[in-house]
Image (cartoon, rainbow, N blue to C red; front, side, top):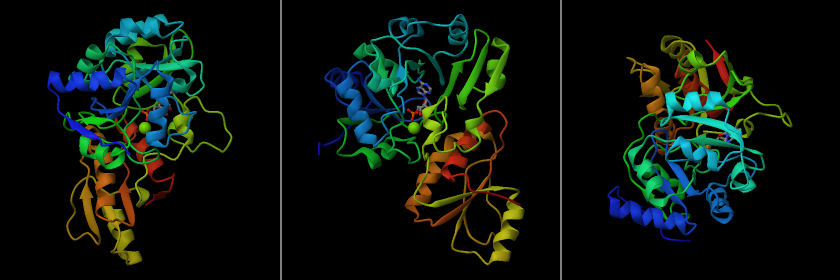
Length: 337
Ligand code: AMP
Ligand code: MG
């Protein structure tokens, strides 16, 4: 077990992190989406350490982060013209584009696929680290595989202490959910493989169509082939048993009263008077909910929650990203009231 150091965001500290990455070590890093577990994307041995630290299945690919989209040419064999247009509009930012990879990206990084997801993060600390190291940085979310993603350095420490070189504390993440992942169905049509803060409506002006992959809202059958390998695994789940509730807080209140349930928790948009069980809240609009959803799931574990009833978010705009995470956290257990 190695000692995991907590680093600040000064240039001197980021140089320590950059050097560690160049030596094939793994560092927890802040991004504008969630915290990531960074390693040199071209170094197979370093990448394997990331999979080991997370307990991540080897066929679940890592996203490769670049300082500038122009560097994508160095790691891909083809860049669709539409990708260049989208990069102008959304890079840097929370958009990952899946493109054919070249030999500089080892199969270990791409989970055995011949494609690679490329993203240019906007977070100033991550950007500086990319600049200082000169690397393409592979970075999945910095949680133990299957557990809610980390949005603070403390969350990363909770999951990764003793397993990685260090964690850079860059404060809480701005968006709170992972990037939107898209692939290209054709030269003009894109497919959302994972919803995030770059929404379908934001992409539509640049495309003939934007397809929302069916795996985003429904369970993948065992053995079914999926466009995005992450979709087939248990994901975002706290220890608590999460139940997604389609209905109002009022309806949930009545449901719990009728059942006589008082020992559970409820995760609601806002506090309610005289609710039958303990309540924590995750906000009334989709951006606030995205920002808080993982933090709340982790907090519920800290509170020792057994069962948590979650007031389902809207599926509109950024809400789709929040819904996608919560329905997986709930293992697709949904009640409609
Ligand atoms: P995470 O690293 O935890 O943010 O998860 C990244 C997710 O992005 C993976 O689970 C995949 O679902 C998706 N992804 C990354 N690279 C690819 C790729 N080459 N093809 C399809 N999906 C990808
Ligand atoms: Mg993840």
